[in-house]
Image (spheres, rainbow, N blue to C red):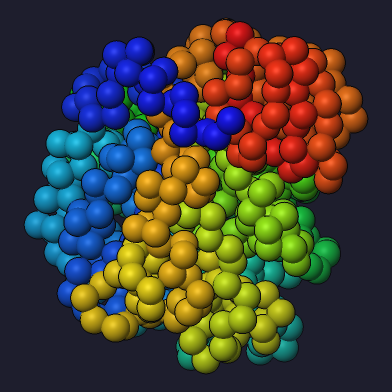
Length: 550
Ligand code: NOJ
């Protein structure tokens, strides 16, 4: 059986289409599949080698055909691009490299016309060092009121030449930089990203206004960058431990996941709810436990939070089951759906993570993991290019790398450019249809000709057609993705295998490296690798996931 055989029939039987217009259905986000567009690397319309908003617009039909519900656009605001646009100088302007406000407006309208909702990034933990507030603060000098919008402090030690505390930047080195007048300022990320002081009333007022600006333009929600970092522990206490970046998401830290952030998110929820919608807030939040993470999605807070535990889980059936169970339990305790994600612009692509040096095995596992994710109740996030089975590019020359952490850690860290390579759309040579010129801001591997959208379209064995079929089925079988359709029930299975049922549906995952015979759970409708079944027993291929209707 190959995966293309049954999806179309089931989808048409359901009467649903992928092209329904955007309607104000309550809770669209609860089981939405949301596609992350890393704007810089998606599609280039003007030939400068950098993706832009017109490029995204021109490729929306790909997303509609893929069958996703919404698009999340990474920051396209005016920015010196010290951290790929996560250093915003003007929150209400489009950076000329990406287009202008009219392009943003056109993009949102075009997406809506295709039935796709649009989520944009908001970056509230820090601004760019070129933001007018920070420039004003630098010019105004120590103890000036304009410095109170950020975290400026005198240093410690003789002449204040040591940082005010021992916090480390996530990108390496101290989290403090000294200004020429002797004061230090806090930046949890690059020095070009000074942290805002959210206790200053103007900060909250300004961001409420920024949110309104984009909501008025028609966006359907926000992905909130560093949603767990906006409030710091009173007095900015020392931690007493180095290598703090390794503790993120596993241990309490005085700069992350402070209780005070929830007040901000509650106020944002009220703001979102004041618009026709629902318009949603998605937290990029790291918390030490699933329970702490679930606090971000209480009924009066944000709608979703990324579930990085799923992304970080190794290829191990028992570990995956634990993460799935704990994630579902923690979010259902607060009445929220869970989110699932395997890749994004900050991590090694999952083909490469799972392959661990073995490309074909990595791809087999990545395909299986995608089917597992899309069979779980809740909302799933796809990262551009995963539908093509793109691997991480690991051999980029140092001089083309842009990740600010690369230079701050002398190349030990900051390898995020490898998952940000411009997408291959068509053709046999770089830039593979990325743009009208031969340029692309990061070089693409020459061998990507067989991975393009054009090359994979119509090939029933391709990863692209697997994703298309999976998303079509997910729409056709509401019992599959919807958290409200009924419970997920684990069934007995041999070691290394997961078997669970949902209403009218079953999913098997074989993480073992050899095939395995099992009683057939139902009728196979989609598989990441060919399954052999005589109706009574099934031979599950290694590293595979299969969907069954009961
Ligand atoms: C998280 C974003 O995903 C990442 O790309 C960025 O570098 C940091 N936040 C800082 O804004």
